Image (cartoon, rainbow, N blue to C red):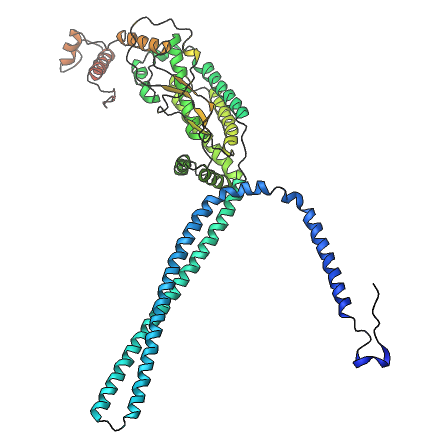
Length: 499
């Protein structure tokens, strides 16, 4: 670029300094500088073009926020509409007041002018004019008070508007937090997850088969009342014949599987694990009751990110310990009190927790159920409870239950996908009917308490109680008589009611 001739030295025109520069050159330099800045910005844009290429994924992630944002926008629109109506009303009233004020001022001026023009009027007319002016001044004061009141109402309305704007800002921040929390949830491979669930079910069957599909010692069958009350103690509808027949052993195995399935479903197959283990029912019900999958995901992700992994692990450890102890106490009634059984159940619960953690961090919530309301569900049934028992040819008795769940059904309600059908025991299966018939026969053969003989009654009626009979023999006889009377009268040996 050719520089223009610039005068310098002592002969410079108009006193221009030697270092002055042509405006055109300055503008050119500024243009070059701006072009360089534009080139730097373009490089930065190219540098982040790959990140911007993922804008569709970002939009998908923000799509979840749109529903909540729309509801907030509707609320904003309603508040703004109500605020605008109030402001329009205040402005209209202020305009009317201003017009009235101008009219009153104009009228005052007219009266003052008329009063100045009529200086010679009577004192009566002056008093009338003064009274009219006083009334107008009172009206003016009233209008001023009204304006002050309207001003306060307008300030209060502006304050409410500002508070609403602050709330909207907090809602926006909450939406951002929810979005970051939802990033914890991932897509779950349902096929792989289903295989892990099946392995868990197989392990549960193996544990129950090992510890309950076996013979019990004959001493365990001496107390018939214990086996009669066992369904109530274990909260199951099946009966337990006091024998070691195949049907009796299968019923004991079914009860164990049912109790394990119930504790797995209620204590471990949950949307999330909370440190407040005993008080975590209400959030679980609220999550399970959500009809909107987006709200369910937000609630679940918030709970999953609220507590530290250490607190969650402590809660899981406590739940496993308490549940294992409860199950061993229950199943000890049918032979499940061994230490090996305790260890296997504890290991089973640890595996269940590890499997179900994948479901907790799934974008689509995975549910488990053992409820009897799902009678129309395509439940599976174990052939173990059909094989090994002869076909029942007699009329089966009335069932005591609709179905007995042996393993929870697991499904994804959002996409209506079944991960595992679960497993149940039906009352019409041969094993159940055979157990019912065998239990009825055992009740018929149940030994009745011995009644005291005539000699015993005569001896007990004597005042001295000896009559040549040894003291230890007499006491044994009286104890037998007392137990027989208490059994017939429905009393326990300690004098309390057996019920």
